[in-house]
Structures are given as structure tokens and as C-alpha cells.
Length: 144
Figure 1 (tube, helix red, strand yellow):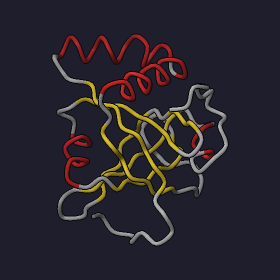
Figure 2: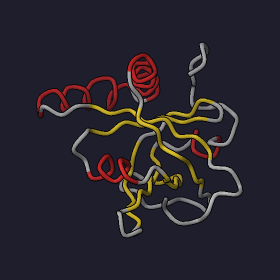
Figure 3: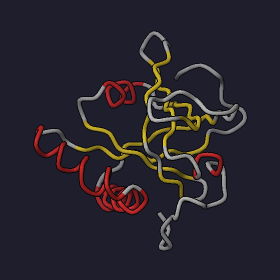
Figure 4: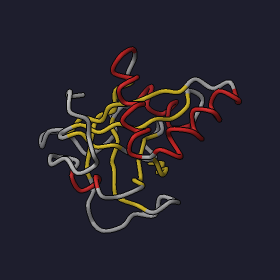
């Protein structure tokens, strides 16, 4: 992340998601079946960040297929509009993970500043933060 933190209005590849409170994140099973779930995303120019816990279905799917699709959505993940962005998800560690956590907490203070960290701790889950990078125009449409 850059020294200047995101306010959710950063221009760039993920700009269509910056104004949406929720995004539908589509990950892929080993057989290529898409699975969509709602997540909160924080946008910082041409990258975006989200979090999940280590035993979630999306974390398991991301371990074998890092390609994802994102769309602005409602709380339950129902897409809003026609925007669909393809990205590559990378698991973060160390300082970049802490910076992503702080950015999520700033943009979503109640959910990601209080509720999610405490819930993950109470349940004994490890929190995982992911960076989303745009996929180039030559990338194929199916999962890797």
C-alpha cells in the first residue's frame, strides 16, 4: 500500500468498487464451478484488499485458484449493475497484511475494526488478508 491511505475514492482499475459497501467476490472450485460470496473491499488505486478467515471456503478455493471476479453488490452478494472485474488474489503476510487490516478498519470501522477481529479471535480462526491485482487483457476467462 502507498503511504497515503485509501479513502475509498481512489481512481484506478477498482474504482467501480470504491463506492460500493459490499462486493460479490467470485472464486472457483477445482472443477471450475464459480462460487460468489459478499465481502467488504478497500480500494487503493490499482489494488484492492479484503479479508477472510483461514478455514473459510473462499480461502480454501484461493489456495488452488487465485483468479477471482468482483462486482459491486448488496449485503447478500447480489450484484448491482453490469460491472465485472477480473483480478488475481495474493495472500498477504507481515507488514502488508497489517496495513490491509488497518485500511479495512478505517473504511469499515464497526465491522472490520471491532466485530470481525474479535469474532475471529473468539472462534480461534486465523485472519487472512488478500491483495487483489488487476488481470491483464490477455488472461483467459476460465480459472487457472
